[in-house]
Structure formats: structure tokens, C-alpha cells
Length: 243
Image (cartoon, rainbow, N blue to C red; front, side, top):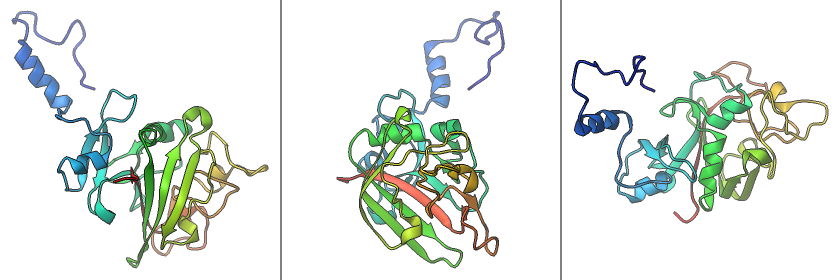
């Protein structure tokens, strides 16, 4: 948000009012114009933009654009990233509101936001892909043919179908139908504990199982046997099923 001086619109009263042309130029500096309204990175790709990077999209029932990182290379491209971790520079032990609105830098480590993700997956049928890479450069992936979230009122519940991949159990989101939990909102299936506090980070916890890609980020050689974090780089992304 651009700060303007108090007492009006910030223009010198001794000068004539700005022209429409100059105001349009000013607005364009802060509200990037695009001819086509893209709903996700698949739309961006179909529009002829095949370079991975930052783009603006418009999701259902939201008037303001959302800046996202588009992966235009992995498995045919067209993927909208909603989570990325690579160096532990961003703290993922956050509140419900933080996970709802999103945090971090979309060009680096970030969580795009549960509300955006819910609205995006309400636009149609989407697939989910999870990319993992360990300290030695070995990589794996998990992919789900169908992926969607419910609304905040329904705890951003996770729904999945059709698994394939090479990453194995620890990357598998087996908690179909689970609500999202954070340190200040407990929606897991553990009767006598809070998984988001024990394992850290916001996630679709069942009863504090293995899968938690938003836990503490451990660098090489640190806390290798602990279950409250990750020891690899991660990227979570969505794309329309019919792409």
C-alpha cells in the first residue's frame, strides 16, 4: 500500500489537479495490467508463457490478483506452487490466520494460503504433485489425480484420490478427509495431544503420523532421527486434472 500525506490525496494544492492520463500511469505502476484473466498457472501456460517464474492469477470470488510461482517445466508444466521449502529461511510454525492468508516469499520459501488454495480447487478438478529432494540430490515425487480443500468453516479439509509416485510413505498424504491443524486450532485425531505443537507446523494431521512437510527444517547432519521436521527440500503444486 502506498502511503500518501494527510489532508487529501497528497498533491500540492497550488498545482492543478492531475490529469486522467497521469493517474492511470500511476495506478499501472502498482496494479500490473494483463489482457487475459488467468485462474491458475495452467492458464498462463496455455497463453504461451512457458518460462517458470512469478505471475498474477485471479481465483474464484476474489477481485484482487494473487502472485504465484508457476513451474512450467516439471511433468509438462502448468503447475501452481503453494508450498516450497529449500533452506529453512522461513518459520512454518505459524497461526491459523497465517496459514489461511499465506506467508513467506513466493519466489522462495512460502505457503500460498489455504483460502487461495480452497478457492482455486473450487474452480474445477485439480491434481496435486509433491516434489522432494534430499541432501545428496536424490529426488522423488508423489502425485494425486484429485485434490481439493473445503472452506474454512469446514476446517480446510483435505480430499485426495488416485496416488502414484516414487517418494514412498513419508511423503504420502494418507489423511483423506482430515481438517487442517495449527498451533492455535486443533483439528487432528489425537485425543490427548496436539500434533501441531508436538510435530510443529500447520498440516492435515491424523494422529501425528509421518507426513508433515511443514515441520522444522533440519539442515544436513542435524536431528536426523527426529519426526518433527523434514530433512529435504519440498515443493507442493496443483494443476487442473485435464491439463
